[in-house]
Picture 1: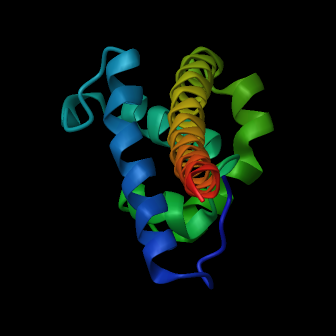
Picture 2 (picture 1 turned 180 degrees about the vertical axis):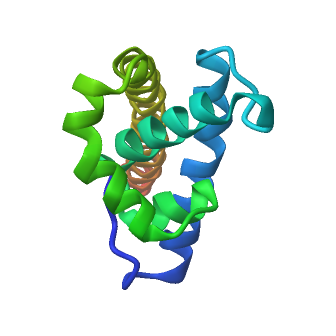
Length: 142
């Protein structure tokens, strides 16, 4: 799933869109509103957990853009993650929920993509089959 920004701009934009579309679902899984400024510390933990979890599947620039942060923030989240799991009360639970939810979402997306690929292959095979049947029928008529 990880792609470098140097690739096609469309691929990069697609990755940002995918990550951006996943983020609200992750907040929802935690029962949190990402715009609730009254819970600053918890939202900071959530952003760090989401940034770290997404970074396992996307590049830092993609994750940063999707979260509306600088890519250095994502690098810091990743760097501080092991310590946060041990020392930052509640972070371990938040990360677990985020990671499990993200893995489920990406599994579903991967399955959808595989179905699309298989459908295209089936269509091509059916076209080939029809051409071969037509060739056989034309040969038999002669």
